[in-house]
Length: 357
Image (cartoon, rainbow, N blue to C red; front, side, top):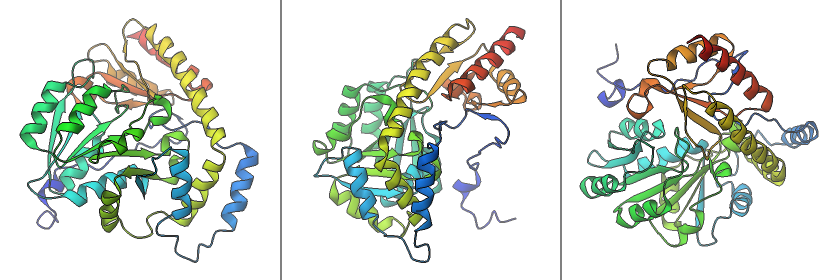
């Protein structure tokens, strides 16, 4: 009905789908399974009760920026921009460089929003296949950089949905060759034990993107971009005013004032990740991929991933199916590391399903 007024590149896209997880064990969205302790919930409620919701929030989130720069060890010579989740920041970067002749590039498979945002803005998107073990194909990446001269190259580190860290030397080689911006997306930095944040002072075209979602604050929708001050100044021209609401600013500052609580949760998730990996590896019909994130990717026997996914759903357990993305992700499923009881329930259900196949 409205095809004549909607741009063609958008008509061919599908909206980002979030399945209904009501009443299910939710292991599909890489969320931290732990809530704040009761005492901190009360303190946060008291802080939010004092919020001046009749006033606009600080448009620069100055107090929160200071807290985040310290907590995330952002170099002094680098500036920070906050977004409504890292998705908004990806969009801001793309809008700042947009043009019909401009290219956004990323490895494949990787985070789906890189492609979606590029196409929504009428830009070209070029995907460079990873190796069979999900490592970067450096010769192919360097060849693609020289050929397409991308305005922005996105590298998820660790990669989503594969969970692995790319070679630091490979990434540095791409930064040095890139004529445009190279964004290292560290959405899962809390679980990775590695970062490019300190490298920002060495490479003006390097940007580091983070989110607090995976740390236990997914409901706040807060992302952070660290980059050269000139770039941040430019991106602020594109950023909509008041994009970080007053409740998020108060909640995030409160959370980082109690960062030790989230750090303990992160350490627990990392321990449970190892336990879950070992348990999945026992199943001979599965190929389980090592992960430096808070999820684990595994490959099923040919043609069985959707059967397993559906059976788990019937049993009240929601994970992520990646089979429809095809390519290297054919027959692949991804499970978020949940609380120990959730992981145990998932493994028990999976064992029963695999036994019947």
